[in-house]
Length: 116
Length: 412
Image (cartoon, rainbow over all chains, first blue to last red; front, side, top):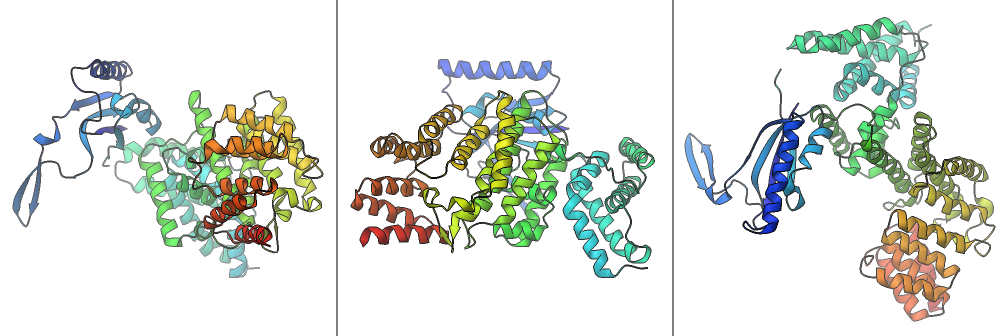
């Protein structure tokens, strides 16, 4: 099965770039990525630019509305994702737990729908 | 002779109460999908309602339901789009058909896998409890709803959502191994203990002990103990709830809560105590002590004493200290303080209670325990304030009656 791990965190919740802690965070991502590759579960994964760069699109009555910013005004924002190939939810959680941002943000794990 | 419709209904109801867990687990094992297994069992029940009045109630009712459930699954798979993906499952089902004639009583027992699935940590706590009661306890959705004081439709939706999550999120129908087993077992035992506590404490409503849920928990703990024998913490939990439940008749008299030290101990159920002690003894011999065994040891000490005065409070305090090391929590410290108040003395108990004031500010038993210690010290005004605080926090009628009685005693 495919599982999408969505990485959410509040602005300023994690370590600041340039600090030793930030280096640790990056190291954590590298270590996690290495494990994903070694275990053969990595399908995709990216970090996103900050929410200030987001554009939300809605088409209502044939008319396209563009909004500056993310769709939901929640405290925690989507900051990146991984797509895993795992047999079970337990396995997906095991790999999602390795995402360093879980320490200050939230990782949402969702199975990808299959159409038969 | 053809059976009356009411006899058919009764036979189906009885079979499901007894064997729902076995049927669902056996179907899930061959179908590979929990939600679909539930639907196929429903199909089989509908078929039984139609067939049994005509051809009679079969000798093995669960065997009949299992066979029809499996055939319905086969039909669904054969009709399904993407047949190629289902061929493996079809082969399993066809084999199962050859292996098990319908008249056998021995249907495969996969209930341990089922209970691990129902108590999966990715389901929320209430859902785990409800699903376990429904699937393994054989309660109807209405009965589960009543236990939670929920509406049947709300509970039905909760159960349906859970089945969908199990089927679609890749929660595997198996017994976890390695390091996962310990954590997952913890989740199963916690669910059973929560069911027991819900029945025992009955925080909502006016019936102080909902016997049903206590009996359900005992049934489930026994089931776990049979499915996974010689597991010390399972035995510990079974012993704990048997020993605690043995005091039920003495705990409420005429709707009023009676604290342990004033209970009529002749009302305690000696059969349950005997069984609990034996189960606990077997567990402790395995030399892997855990929180449930420690709590059961505490309950056993109470059961052995002929009165509150004769209770070994020093040993009790030692057990609470041990429990606090294994599983630190303010509740354990609170219980330790109560034991200490009878052993070392009330002042030492107050010293233990003081640091908990903030953390347990909204916890009724903290105020009730503190009030009791103060009352026994003769500090009536402080005791009164604490009893009033406890009273504000309780809705259970039995406890309200008890606290009001205490307050009246001090004011007299």
